[in-house]
Amino acid sequence: MDSVGESMIDKKIQLNIRNEIVGINCKVPLSNGKYVTAINFDNAATTPPFKTVINDINRFAPWYSSIHRGTGYKSKYSSRMYEESRETIMEFINANLNSDTIIFVKNTTEAINKLAHRLLPEKNKNVVLSTLMEHHSNDLPWRKRFNIDYIEVDSKGRLSIADLKNKLNKYKNSVRLVTVTGASNVTGYINPIHEIAKLAHKYGAEILVDAAQLISHAPIDMKPKNSPEHIDYLAFSAHKMYAPFGIGVLIGPKSTFEKGEPEYSGGGTIDIVTHDYIKWAKSPHKDEAGSPNIIGVIALISAINTLSLIGMENIFEHEKKLLNYVIKRLKEVPDIILYGDTNNYKDRLGIITFNIKGIHHEILANILSYEGGIAVRNGCFCAHPYIHRLLNINKKIIDERIKNPDMPHPGMVRISFGLYNNFAEIDNLINLLKIISNNKKYFIEKYNSKYFLM
View 1 (cartoon, one colour):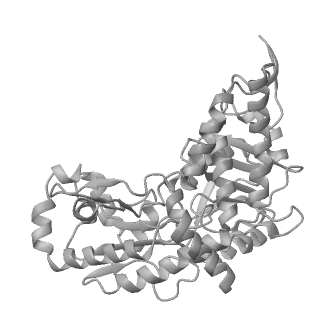
View 2 (cartoon, helix red, strand yellow):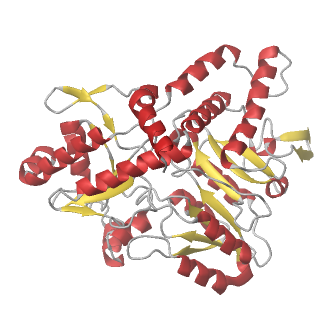
């Protein structure tokens, strides 16, 4: 990155961005009764809101009213804001409103479930290729109506493009969709979505990108419809992009949503109804049943404007610096186990998973919170098959856990960065991890109780 871009993000991070995060200076209690400024390294789960988002919601609130069909000024204004927001979203990811539709949902999970319901299996096209690294939300919905197979990962957990090619060749023209995460929520690997799109289109398939983990960390380009690298469907959630007000987005071809019936029916979804006749509204309204979440939409657009002002490339480069630094520092911690490739990680977001030998991941995560006010996440991150592979958990162990659910849950500790995190916070984390690793017996005895595992 050039010096101009570097100085821009560094200056914004130091002077502006941290001050634009709600709750950045909140104090949280420690086990000794003292309070410390909270450190949030759980951004892959959800991000705190921008102050600009809260301010824009407050400015809009006096004009809040019903969406569509209302004749009052406030209703017309709210409706216009709601509909014009689609253009802002399309510009953010370089989609095309002429050929694509944008559907508002609650979150990425609902978006993928909606597409799984609306994407009808075609004759001789009943296969969906998912991957071994997917979040459950991009796996389970496809099992209901399609034959699903999984693209393998290599020994480091990266997606195997070779196996994708093999499976596309195996199923030939039977593949309806290749569905893949833009970036893993476990290892942070960024998948080559445009290369995958090109391969999928070569075999007459479409591609869905689950962009939940990618949308707020790096630029996304859906590319023109006539490009072989075009992304057919895109799904993401606002709560992972500094606008946690219950809105998500599904983008895809209008032709897909013109066919079939919506999974939810009711107000706003129809054009004409009698007791024996239904004419559905046109997309996207057919797929947005009930009263729209206009507050969520306002929040999302505000977040997009703020992210665009900072610059997605600048955000990516800043978080890459954090990633480089934390991997280097984590290697200093005694008995640490790092997952994913920690030598060649140019294709990773700021998501790192690890364990410390001899300490259960749940206990370790609680220690970080109670001793340092550091928020992380632990467990399997709704990606059980991927975690099983990374931890080398065999089928025998899985079968034993199915029979005995009280067995200790396998898992890892995850830290994940937002654009506001800094190097001093990483230093605090490393210093505490070193203390924990060097005093395992003390901390295990202190925290190995039901009270601290709640």
